Length: 117
Image (tube, rainbow, N blue to C red; front, side, top):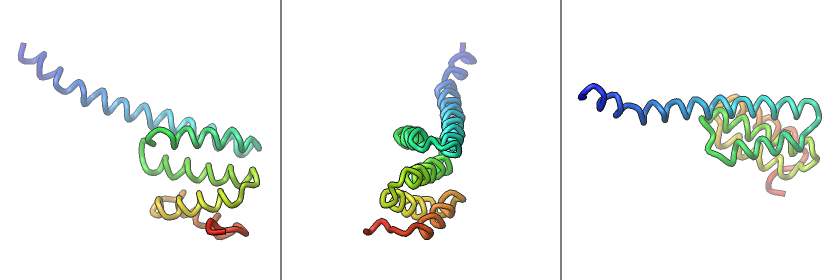
């Protein structure tokens, strides 16, 4: 009986870790779909997917950074440059140590508007 109870005590941790892994996989799939939609010209759908990812806690900082970058790129493609600038500046600041944060910083510098305008 002792063996069963010790196995059951680790079950919540195992379920939690599996849940985190599933969330990361799902969010990665959504990122891929958003990026594909953006590349094919469907910026509105890419924006909605990025907002969906950011609306639930992202599985890790890189997923959050990528979703934020896609949001900025989508806003830029939709001609919403002021909003894009603000999203890029946020991503560059918040995720400065990630590739997506660096890319956002570069996009912010290339825009003709800034977040402060």
